[in-house]
Amino acid sequence: MPEVTIAIPFYNAETYLELAIVSVLSQTFTDLTLLLIDDGSTDSSLKIAQKYLDDKRVKVISDGKNMNLGNRLNQIPGLAETEYLARMDADDIMHPQRIEKQLKVLKDNPNIDVLGTNAYSIDENNDVLGQRMDFSNDALVSVTTFIHPSIMAKTDWFTNNLYDVSALRIEDSELWLRTSDKYVFMAISEPLLFYREIGDQYYKKYFKGFPGVLYMLRENKFSIKHWMFSLKYFLASFIYMFFNILGVEHILLQRRNKLHLKKKGYSFYI
Image 1 (cartoon, rainbow, N blue to C red):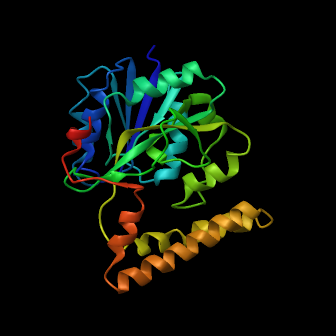
Image 2 (cartoon, one colour):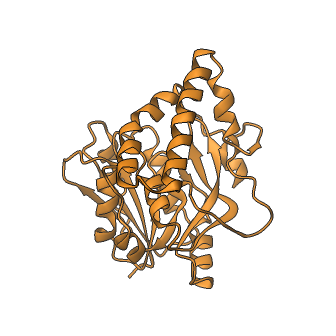
Image 3 (tube, rainbow, N blue to C red):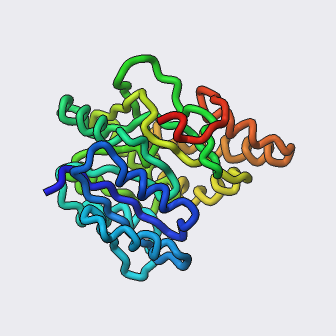
């Protein structure tokens, strides 16, 4: 039985899915299962995933339904047959040593419940724009939130801490707010994920999350940390809209990265 399942839910991800798959199958740690879950794609994503069924480590799940990300994320722990489970998105790229290093940290530190990593930000051309977090040289850093596709934990943790699918588009943030006081969250300071950030009009993406934020507030109306998150979310939404109107929204996107790096192909950083 493999030790680790890496799960990639995907929906109409034909542009970048193959890169994501190859980055998983090229890991230095090979005792793994790659679970590819189609959420009713209408492009060639499913065909791309099925190309890799010749690799015995690959499993493709496709029921023809479009259930949205939160439901697919909650489906994954029941499909995983391994002790450990790692998140991954269909448009990101794994560093070749990501799973090897995360698994070692989790085994060496059994007190850690969820382990994330630092990440490089990449654009549509796979060029590195920056490093998301400017950690110190400490190998491990205590955190309260994660770069979502970088996390890894025991499968049981995901089973016992499902995403709230009503918190649409902020499922991960709601999960961290709900669980961070009860579990040990840590991150590896080394960037082990190439996290794709493309497009413009980010304020529209924030606005689409308003129903989820309002739902979360109704469910946690007496929680200060939920109110603080919501206020920051709404404020960021309108700041992004204002900067977009001025034609300088890219400045805010650049500020997401604590370190700015010269554009080069992502392989330069491996």
